[in-house]
Length: 355
Image 1 (cartoon, rainbow, N blue to C red):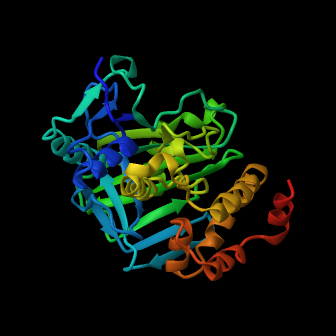
Image 2: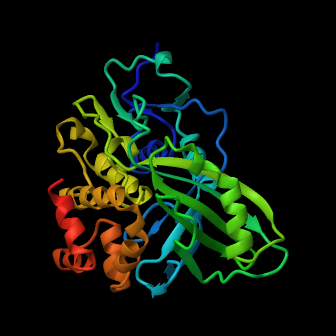
């Protein structure tokens, strides 16, 4: 069986981002790469969104950018504006096509369905796949979204609704998310923060139908695209060694309090490529210990007091837009952290510290 210098297990967002970063930095001219991915074809299956707090390689894959966003509860609505850090959405289909086209020109890059098809004994392996079944009783962000198209121009495509808590909570944390790509096209998602064992929360089709009809007042539309997923809001207990490096969500690149992952993957990929010749000796890349600590406290509160979370989320955003964006994107300083923490209800967060 053929040997490879590098092996990437999982050809999704993390695996392909790393492969692309290796390729554009000429790290695969004299080195070989095998990507292990069992899907039959690449097509649009996800929409990755984030605030652009740093440059990335995929501006040509952006569906749309916004400078304005709102957050809603059943009682209040709050709008924020920020031109410095636009909110962007990536079309995964364009992302896959861009990277596949780039890699196809390099004979040192090969795709395989299974790891057993190659000799990886002496390879440096980058793994983006969870190697064991994760606990469904733990906390997850699970969602389903549909891109709808209406015959009339009814959306304000200059502003997104980041979180709309004006919906049935069912003793969990539930919100809707609306990204208007144009005046008559938008992605609308129903999102839950809960365990995966309560199947009563997964009537996503009905939830979306009712929200579009009753909350948005839209009766006539067609569905162009559907996506669904579940993001673990806990760090996997995998360990790196000098021959296996975890990447993506498997490598702790998901921000636990938000589920945001895409830009973290890009930063991690750049870090790996910059240090590729000595990667087995480098310090493990992470999002920052302070965010790990703050997110764990935040999620303890969420699990114990789901009924309070709409108001807690709403109050978090009652600060400057740059402060909340930088905090949610792992780029905040101490003063900005204190500003966010000061918006939290003191007693329940203090108790969560010692739980």
